[in-house]
Amino acid sequence: MRIPMKHLLKIWPEYFEAVRSGKKTFEIRKNDRGFQVNDLLLLQEYNPKTQEYTGRELLVEVTYITDFGQPKNQVVISIVKV
Image (tube, rainbow, N blue to C red; front, top):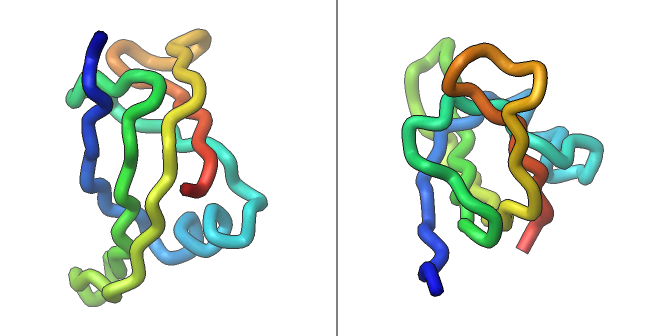
């Protein structure tokens, strides 16, 4: 049985806030890390204008992954807050 991985990911403020509020329950990402169900994503808010992390973080768990309808090597990842 595979041990879930923990991935640290940048997320822009508007998307961070949507995940935090519960309105956004997915991420669309390049699958360059081999994401799998039960992995943890530590979403670290990053301001692209200042090119700095804000210090706010959210821990979410991957519940489902699909590449249906996505460009090559890109996936839609369903997430829930931990």
